[in-house]
Length: 394
Ligand SMILES: Cc1cc2nc3c(=O)[nH]c(=O)nc-3n(C[C@H](O)[C@H](O)[C@H](O)COP(=O)(O)O)c2cc1C
Image (cartoon, rainbow, N blue to C red; front, top):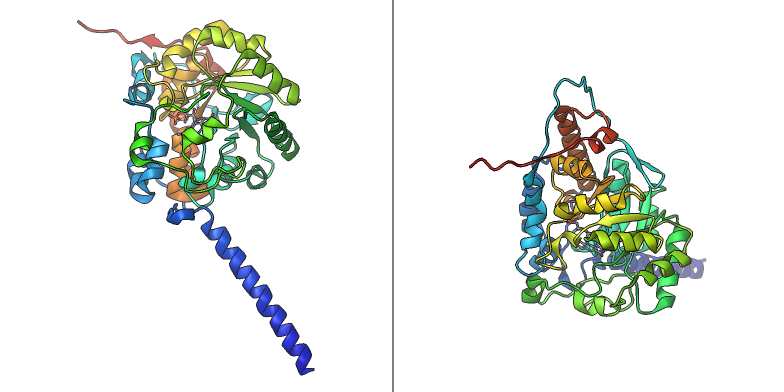
């Protein structure tokens, strides 16, 4: 009897040790190399998205923060992404009987609560220990679409699990190794992701001076990319295909039955080429000003691209969206929905999944107020609104 009790105790102790080691491992993986991501878990009060940036600066390490908030070179294009919205005005209509405007809409057959979705962004684990799994839960709670980067810090399966059936899109950086591309697209498809976003504006990384100064290396693994931990963004992009052509869009189309969205379009001719190659949607973006400094603000090129696309496929727009009026102006200029990159990560850092939900809820409420004051009852009404170019009073 004593022997049995002894053996059982030994087994129990061994199991306890295995459990403890596993638990410690799970907790420290996102904080590898001493990196301290946030563990907050609360709704956040927001009066201005730009203010969130200041708060995040105080709670995550400088290398991770600069990687997230930074842009390329002088950061002029990044700054212009936000200020360009000031060059077009909303011409308010005040006797339209608008009442409690409806922000719901649809994109690629998916119903969403607001015309605002999460842009794909690498390494959410720099912001919060729950990483993209946390973001996915917050985005799902807000009733909209989560886009997941190839360079995510959670696995595609973890993110799908956290979304619990909510719509998710997978963003592909084409690898030089076609077997990797096939495997990732098939995995995303099997896990229930509903579209593939092919990003075409990053054949190499932009010149991000903050990362150079910080000698920034990812302190944690990017589990969907082999051997990524401890490497900089330049080294990661080196494994990606560095010469993209229309044929690559066709190639991705041939890998999947899902719609393929081409992200990073900044010129009407490229929109035309992408549609001819089979793109099911165009994503107008300059990558949040992180790639080519000296390029125009994304909002400046949107009307030309929308005119060329001429409603043949839907348009997603991002880069610089921080307010309801920005969303209104982008939709009035031809976008079907907008996406946000940094604001999602700031919400995640400040409040975990609840913080992400707070960011979407803030922007939805802000958009609804703008719609009410401008005279638009529905998202389709915004699409039929004409903006007024700003007059210069001499
Ligand atoms: C930290 C960070 C990482 C990003 N990583 C990716 C990525 O892996 N793939 C991609 O297509 N875009 C990536 N982007 C670009 C976003 O999808 C989006 O275009 C951009 O953030 C929009 O600008 P905003 O941050 O002003 O909203 C990233 C952006 C940020 C801020």
